Every structure is written in structure tokens, then in C-alpha cells.
Length: 248
Image (cartoon, rainbow, N blue to C red; front, side, top):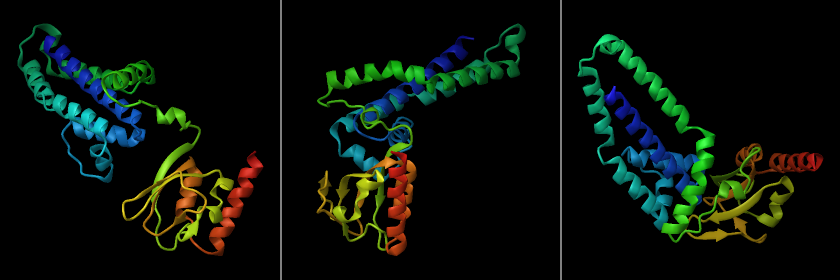
């Protein structure tokens, strides 16, 4: 049974490390979904090359976090788990422990419990202050929980999408679009030439190929992304404004 306990311990530590890494990346400004993906792929050595990966590489604190995850992931954790499982299966025991089916049943139950603990919100609440303190203590990052600051709950979210030809927002200024009337805010504009406009003014114009960082209710953001230019798009805008006014 010592082998089984070792397997569960290593697996628990792996899940805990990935979870801490995810929380640390979230505190640097990444969304929880991207942070979780990057932490898991880095720790387990998947090595995905994505646009989100560039956001990690270009930030010094995120680089340190992912480097630590890579070192821990390559420290032989997965190999250790496999070796321990094999050892556990082959070690002769007496009584019920000698039955292979019972050993695997214990493993499955133990892993299930580990996964449940790994996704526990209670654990997340206890770890968050510790991770925040560590980032502030050992890095130059002013660790901020952007999800909490922006209240990314109750259907509110931050999203990114590319403006394409024929979109309702293409070749128009923010003042003309009046997105605030719909309850949507443009936090930044990433131009196709690589320049970035933070907190853009009303005179800022949106062009094809711009990537917008927007904040608002998720359902509204999805509608806005699919809205096409022309009279129909203008009508959808007016309907969205009327709906928002009716909710206030």
C-alpha cells in the first residue's frame, strides 16, 4: 500500500503545482481559461505554440512562472508515477491486497478524490492569498486579481476578437459606435501593425485587422462580434441599447 500512497501523493502534488501555476498566471492578467491551458501544457510538456503562448513569453514574470512549471514537470514526476504503479502491481501482498482488481479499484477511487480536491473552490480560496503574497514578495509584479477587479462573474467577461471586412464596427470611430450605450467598453485596440492603443478615445477609429479587447456581458459580446455592417447592424445596436435601458 505504500506504493499506492506514493502514487496518490505524487499525483496530488502535480495537480496542486498546476493549480498554483494557473493562479499565478491569472494574477499577471491572463484569463482563467488561457492561464489553465498554459499551466497544464507547460507542466506536462505538451508544448503548444499558440497566440496565447506569445503573451506568456513576452512577459518576464509569466516566463518565470512557466519556467518553474517546466522544471518541475521535467523532474521525472510522470516517470515516477508509472514506475510506482508498476511496482504496486507487482509487489506480492497477502489477503485482499493481493487481488489486482482491488488495487486498481483503490487507485481509481484515490485518483477521483484527488481530482475532486484539485478542482475545489475551497482550496482555491485558501491558495489565492498565498500565491498573491509569493508573487509580490519574490517578483516585481504588482499582483492583481483582474477577475475580481473587473467582477468577471454574473455573465460579465473580457473578450478579444478580430475585426474583419464587413463587420459592423469596421471603419468607424468609437464615438460613432456608441458602444457604451449597450454596456460594452473597449479596453484596448491592437492594430494590425503591432501598435497598441490603450483606453482609446472616442475619436479612435477601428479598422479591418484590428484586435479589440472588450468588456461587457458575454451574450452581448457574442452578438457584437457577429454583427454585420449596414442598416441591419444599426438596428441590432438600437435594440441592444433599448434592452439595456429597460434593465436599468
